[in-house]
Image 1 (cartoon, protein in one colour):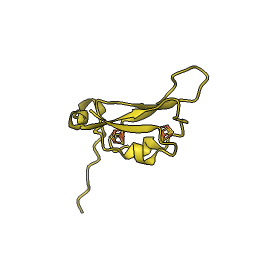
Image 2 (tube, rainbow, N blue to C red):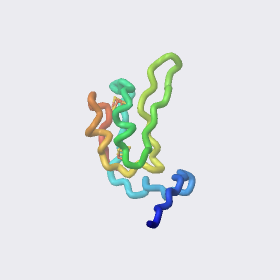
Image 3 (tube, helix red, strand yellow):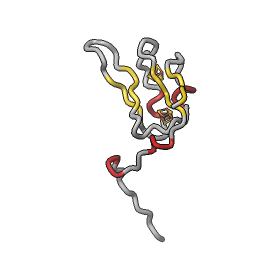
Image 4 (cartoon, rainbow, N blue to C red):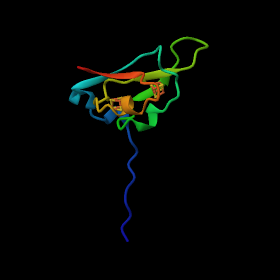
Length: 87
Ligand code: SF4
Ligand code: SF4
């Protein structure tokens, strides 16, 4: 039986899928409750939670080098803190 190969993902070698973007997501930092729901849904793994102010809950931060503008994050956000806008 042939075994498959598992190739470790190297983000430094990944192509910049942000070039495909027609729409881009904007996070309303006032609305974002830092629940992290959007993070695992992003197909490009381009959202992480970032601490903007010391002592405050981290909020969603989007890496536009890789975000392709699919809008999934906007759909799954429970408080509608991500708005899709034209590029
Ligand atoms: S628009 Fe799509 S690719 Fe961009 S951050 Fe949201 S889920 Fe990820
Ligand atoms: S799902 Fe919405 S509220 Fe939760 S971290 Fe993402 S942007 Fe913020």
